[in-house]
Length: 319
Image 1 (cartoon, rainbow, N blue to C red):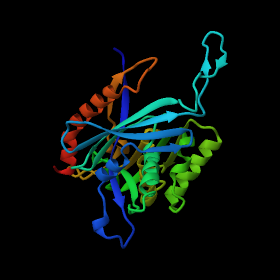
Image 2 (tube, rainbow, N blue to C red):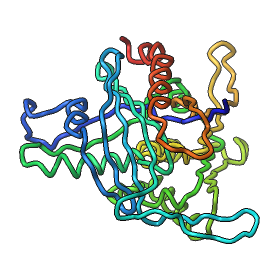
Image 3 (spheres, rainbow, N blue to C red):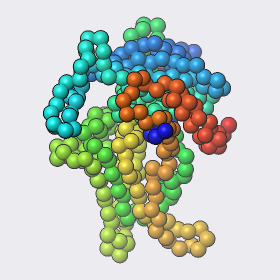
Image 4 (cartoon, rainbow, N blue to C red):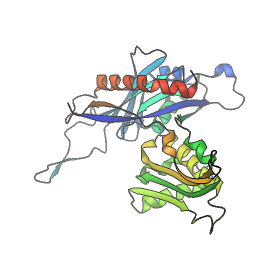
C-alpha cells in the first residue's frame, strides 16, 4: 500500500512562572496534559479537541489533537469541466477533520508532535492551553515555550568560527510567519528578519532568502559581524522554529573560517544549522478519500518513531 510521511517536531516544553510564585505551586507538563484531556477550543475557523490515548510505553503520555474546520472550507473543482461547487456539509454540526498525534516522555521532558498544516500548530497549541488553564482561578498562570531539541554540534561549530563570510536563510511562505515575532524583542537581527518577512508577504513571495556576504578577507578583513550572524540564527530558532513553524525553514547555512587543530591552518567550512535539529517522520497509509483520521496508524507510527529516536535522545540528555 502507498504510504505518506508525517513529519514531527521534537521539542522540550519549558514552563516559567512569574517571580514570587511559590515553587510548591509549580506543575509539570504532564499535569498540564492531563488537565487538557477532553478540552475543546475554537481558533478562528477551527475547533481543537485534545484526547489522551492509551500507550504501553514507559513514562510516556500519548494523545491527539483533533481539528474540525467548519468555515472557510474550499470548493470542489471538477477536473473535466473546470467548474466549482461547494462541499455538501452542514457547518452547524459538521466540519473537515484533521489530526496531530503526539507523545510526551515525562522522564526526559521530550515532546514529539506531528506537523499538520491543516491541523494545530505548536503556537496554536500554546494558545489552546492558555485559554483553558488560565480560565480556572485555581491554576497559577505560566509562560510555555517549546524549545527545539538539538542533536548535533553545528551551532557550537558556528560560534567557534573566527571569520564569517556568508549567512543564508531560506524561509517558505513568509505570510505564515508574520505573527511569529514578539514586538518586545527589538534586537537588530529580530527586526531585520521581521522586516524581510513583511516585505516577502507584500511581494507575494513563496520563498524568502535573507543573505549577507563578506567579499573576502583581503577586501573585508573583519568579515560579517559575529553578533549579527548569531543574532539571525537565534532569531530564526526562537521566533520561527520554537513557535511551531519549523517546517517553514528551508535553509540556515553559515560559511566561515576556523583554525584546524591538527594543521593550524584557517580553513573554510559551511555549517548547516538545521543539522542541529531532528528531522524525523513516520509513515501512514496514503488514502485518497479518507473516512477517519487514521488514529491507529498514527498511534503505531509515532510510537515506533519514539522507540527509534530514544537511544539518541538518551545520549543527548544523559539518561
